[in-house]
Image (cartoon, rainbow, N blue to C red; front, side, top):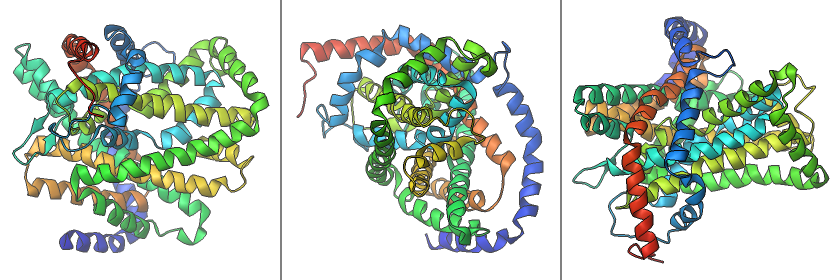
Amino acid sequence: MKKILAILLFLPQMLRAESTFSDQVNSLFEPIVNVMAKVIFWEPFSAGMPIVVIWLVIGAVFFTIRMNFINLRGFKHALQLVRGDYDNPEDKGEVSHFQALTTALSATVGLGNIAGVAVAVAIGGPGATFWMIAAGLLGMSSKFVECTLGVKYRKIDENGEVSGGPMYYLKTAFEKRNLPFSGKIMAGLFAILCVGGSFGGGNMFQANQAFSQLEGQFSMLQGNGAYFGFILAILVGAVIIGGIKSIANVTEKVVPFMAVLYVGASLFIIVMNYDQIFDVFGLIFDSAFSGDAAKGGFVGVLVQGFRRAAFSNEAGVGSAAIAHSAVKTNEPVTEGIVALLEPFIDTVVICTMTALVIIITGRHTGYDLEGAQLTSSAFESVISWFPMLLVVAIFLFAFSTMISWSYYGLKAWTYLFGQSKLTEYSYKLLFLIFIILGSSVSLGAVIDFSDMMILAMAFPNILGLYLMSGEVRADLRDYLARVKSGAIKKFK
């Protein structure tokens, strides 16, 4: 720990020549970013829908039908499981159902809920909200499948430490079809993409945006990004050094608090304008099916809603399966059912709240603002001090996202390089260094590259889910039959 602190203390001094460093790194990554962008954001039907979003949405629709609408049927049971009604203290694992859920939620609830929704509504109009909700509901089924498999094929070592996620079930999916080499390639590809995504989208981008918001409110911080990054790295390091149990202990407190903070402010504005509620929902529904031609018509509205929902809740990307695999349970299906709450909370609740506030305050049209600025303006029109609250919210969103993604990246890292103290601490040190880098320099190309790596994780992951969907459906039927017959009983 002392060596890690010494390295972190030295970094801010090294980053004085930040613009030169930033330019060099950007020029190195730009060619790679351009190639990845052409693949991931390729629009085969010229409708503005990237291939990765099409891949995610088709998968979500397929799994919803294949699992007989588990996203709706399993909702009540999911709440019972999160409440701990079926928790057995003797089950193997490291964290509770609730802790696993909050850890995974902390990685998805973030700037996409604040800035991404504003982009969807500004470009697609109010109707984008309807399709965002639809995509969130469908995404619940993808989460169910991937998190069930994450628990079913996890590995537990002699110390009780859990490793799980797409790396493990992808390998198994192909091995069962006598394609072991293909399984190793797909699992390795996912792990590499996950490590890259953890350093960028799950780390540098979060640190960079958190500092930008603070810098905007407190001018004395301008030019001191490296020192902010150092403090943030210490805070993150204090949590992640303790592993998943430490991360879960923090997220189970931070996630409910930040959700209540943000949703509470949204509800306050909605209640203040209760007389507009029915008109707003009417506008959302009408616009969803009769999109403004200037905004791309019906297809343009649908695309914006699906696109932003997919980017926000990460259903089908596979990252959440890593956190959920650490749960204490001997029934993999239980965690899949718990996981389907994620897209509901992230997209159907929090993203919809943001959209309603923007529409109610009239900020969805006629305002030359983008992303978080538009959302901030909408809240500020009713709550004058909201920009300060938004700074707190964004910091908490960024902090919680980083600690969860550090776990995702660590599990992918140890899958590639083996489980040992050396590999574990080398990854954590690199992760903390990237926090300082992300806070202090404008690494545009690197951040874009890493964000795209997160989205690219969906390609191997969804393929594996397709191959194993029949197995998951059989497990689901067996589990629900045992719950109905009373073979599986409540512990509380």
